[in-house]
Length: 556
Image (cartoon, rainbow, N blue to C red; front, side):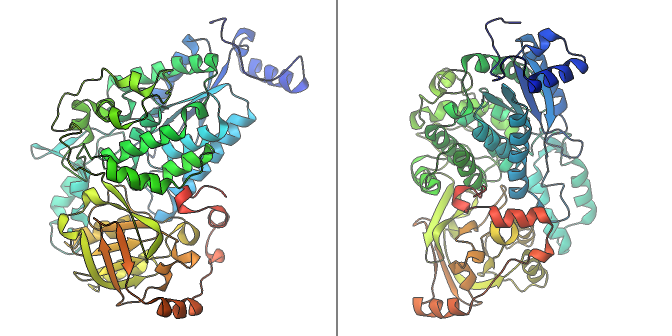
């Protein structure tokens, strides 16, 4: 054991609590020498039902080996890990409610047991931000190990991308694609473990964790089945002991500059729109309350998109990894980053990436030769969205950058899906999916609607506007997170069928062409209340206590 490392536990003398704790640890078979070591929580989100997390037990063993060799005593803990691709009951049961619950779980067990530091292992959508929120709350030495991407598979002699194949679902349902062929694709579209290999929420958050400085360089883009990620987990276990010794805590790393670096990374890679929720949530938990959507908006105008990752371009994560990965992207972005931001290495972000090579400049472009001169994610404002709404503009065709069409309003996801199946949504329509936000429906995603619309060949002809979430794999004119949400009486609640909606992405505008006088009249007749009797206690609690979208829908 390194004798210079001392425990942070604030227990003096032989108090009853400490002696009970000591006795229980000894009773589990640990020696007195082990008990005197710094105690490290290895916060794992492994389970057998989440393919993004099914391999994390092996990574955890490598972390624990590193902790022990560096003089610590690791204890593995488990948290919730829901895969949104595996949830069948309802999309509202994922993402925001589970994310907030995960942060609570980590806080409860790590704080109550007074661990000296923690290593967090996660990969997928809601789990990475939930763990990072907990790190921000607890403010103890912390490091994250993200689980890596799912490598590409092959079918009929070519590499395949699950985004491409899931687009066929709607075509099968409408009789435009052979079911037998789709079944063959389904059988071959995924590898055994890792995050789906495109820039949806999971990989976007893994990239962001590295840009925040809370994971080791390069961890954001590693194959889930490669040796590099096992080595990374071992190094993280050793490094957490140095963070404990140096008393470097999470909030010393999670600064406003770090959040801005993560936003720049998200813009440069056409990351998921869900990061407009997750990064403000992490910042808010760290005590950094700002109008973060305005920061996103500024970044969208100043940070170029330098990686065309699927679904906003052709590249799979495996190809980005070959080009140099997340580390190479941060190297490219250094002139636009806060280079003096501290990271878990104990060095600044500029020091970490100064010598990082880029192996393929077509995949990871130079700043002066970007995919697009502006970031891929836009914040729109206007009479329909006074507080803003979000679109992944990098996945929208140029022809849809300006749109004008009649509204078709739906007060639930099911209503919208039924209208689509009955061919009641046509080219040129603006499909309004409302009452899906945190207060009304826990931030329900419009993903299923988006995919079926695309499968029917309407993705480039119909605008989707919702106060719910959009999938990290959004494409087309899909606008989400509209604020204020309909349940709060925002303008979205007042839209009627046939109202004209105008959108101009280049001007960052979204407007409802209805007079203020008419809207005032409609507002006087509007009424909505949460149907509490239809939901279990946890979801009622979420609806009651989740805050604004712009602050990440954290507990208020």
